Image (cartoon, rainbow, N blue to C red):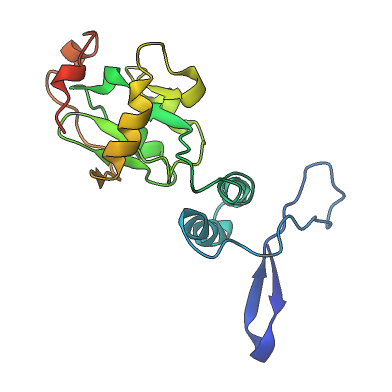
Length: 185
């Protein structure tokens, strides 16, 4: 990120993307204006703040803002990752701890992903100890209904932003199949 002087001497942030194959000291501007509102705007602010501490992570966030979120069609429900039936009554929250945008929502015995917040980073998939999180295209047959269920419940349930201890009997429930009737809304 380069700083330029705006009117009255105030700094104006200009977002630039530096590629590994470019000559040192050169950069290519990827977007002239950041998004004005919504999750993309929040990510731009977060990425600019992170840039002072960790350039790689800030660039990661900027990439998702300008190339993923900014291009989404807001009239369509877009969900890149969803939580499926395996999470019911297990509710481990390891996935919450790694989410860079706090897109998880917590219910009484289940977690869901908010499709408006998810940036398709894939970090949560590897963290789920019961393998309950899938890309929308990879959702197993018989669990397609969880795509709509995640979208619906994410509008009602509150965000969860910190890891919590799982239920004491979570390990027992991890292997149980057909748990949808146990879902508490």
